[in-house]
Image (cartoon, rainbow, N blue to C red; front, side, top):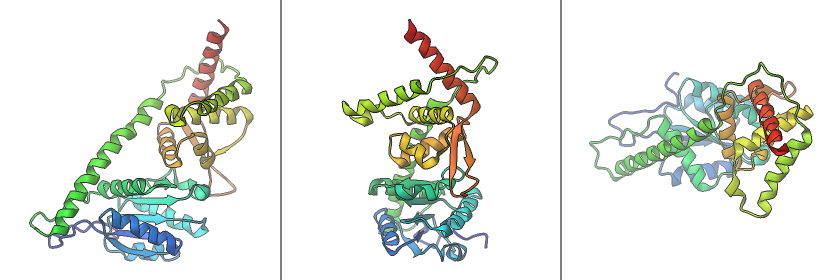
Amino acid sequence: MDSYLSNNHNSSNNFAVAPVLIIGDTSEARARACSTVALSGLRTAGAVGVAEAEERILSQVSASALWIEIEAADPRLDIVLSRVASDISHQRYRAVLSVRSDILESVEAHALDSNIDIIVDANQSERAAALGIAVAAIGVHTVNEASGDKSAVRLRQLSDEVSRIAATLARLSTGPGEIVRRPQADTSADVPEISLDTVRGVIRARRLRSRFFREDLFADPAWDMLLDLLQAEITKLRVPVSSLCIAAAVPATTALRWLKTMVEEGIFSRQADPHDGRRVFVELAPDTSYALRRYFAEVGKISAI
């Protein structure tokens, strides 16, 4: 049916915000997701396992969002996520996928090719924010204005708050795109040769700062990922999404958002792992590689003065 997992704005319903459908691979995962939904002031449409997920998505009449909580790698999850990604592309609903960092590799194929918001090792505030943004994005802030019911008032206040949070984070999210947008490279010149030791020296120097200062003072995930991919390009190694998130030296959830932005901007390119459909490799786009090599060449000239 076309209306599944869509919002129900029936004016006779005081709860115009549809409930959240939960998918979890264990009872503990489902309980944790239910707690997040409850703390956000929303209702739960139900909580099912991965095996029942597709059937439940089809039968669910209305939901404001889909929350997927995963504790272990599961081959069946890829089928569910492919279905969810397709639904999101048709704007049928929004979804949040919560995973642990040690199983990020098993879902990384979906980190860059869909609007599934992936959060990794997230705390309660991060979880609530992700859910609030998903709910607000689907346009659920219509509440029956004629109702004086306290629950309706609470939902209206909640929707106003998540809309504010979503707007704030949307403004913040433009930062990566603005910072990393590159000029058009002049590819008519020769591509400079870059020493692997030079790149590794810069990476080591950046890591050394954390011995003397708080690491968050120098967080620059875009540059750290650029350096890591240049190092991999020189050594002819392939870098999966999960490894690049570690190289970013920021929380994995933050690294994923930066990574998605840089892929969308054409700064990085993605390559599917031919041996494992769940994995994705990331590499520098040709223009990015050229710009980085020119940068190091120019820095070398300054150092020689």
